[in-house]
Length: 199
Image (tube, rainbow, N blue to C red; front, side, top):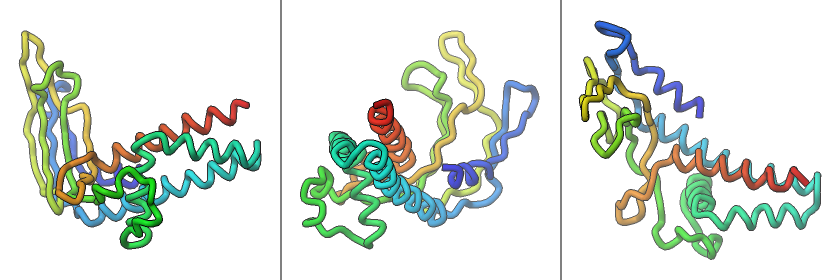
């Protein structure tokens, strides 16, 4: 995930008039292809880490425990989605016979366009200061200040920067984004691993 953070660091964030108000600037375009390549590598590495953890459980406990660990993972949609994407990336496509039980084999998910989203999530409700760029690349931009006044409260700046790739199904419907999938899958691996290593 540090690979993606490296691209986020290209966004300059500077104080303007006070510590409260900041200016956001991206001086040059970020290549969507580079972002997508790094995310593809991350997805494959996350899927492969499942096998490493499975081997560790097998060596510390037994084969039965490692099978239960893997079966438990497949109770979650994130496992099916990351498996589908990782195998598609590694093999340049999917053999549907191989993924007979994968929940996503019908929808055929794939990585779509790159996006950058800056948002202030501390604002209550649906109206939040947001900047969004979606496309083949992330274009340069400059935002001189971010201020929202709502119900007497003043909100400054963005508190979250997301850089990721959209996951679409075969019909182009958005079904999530790659960095969120990776974060959720890593959390799931840790949770399921901890269940066995406490024994």
